[in-house]
Image 1 (cartoon, rainbow, N blue to C red):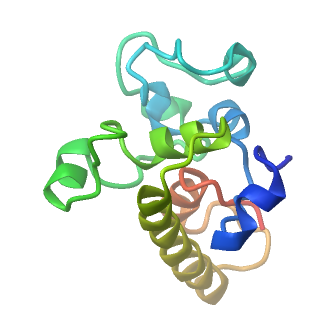
Image 2: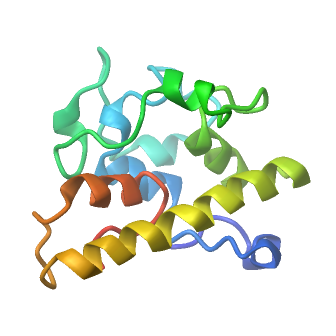
Length: 152
């Protein structure tokens, strides 16, 4: 799983995702419905093996078969949705992976990404046996949806 943007473009901010948007879509994220059927602005190669729904959120398409995270409405209430990316963090990440840079927005989203992974990985390590992927499936699904490899 390769990093999707030149390393020099991201390491200054400490952003080193473990999964590309294509990797995430292939594994199964957001119930296959994040883009709500409109993925036209993104490379078709990202969707060649993607687990997508044609009719709305489908939990069976998620890698761990569980829902993880809050609704888009909750994201809006918490101030996590920006005018630049009305679908949220993953939309920002996809656009970032394609080379878009908005320094203040990038710092905001990367700060959120940095805060998410270590906390959830730590909980999995503290509570799960090594290689027990049935343990804390929601947290693993959430890690996947933040470009962290959930199989660590």
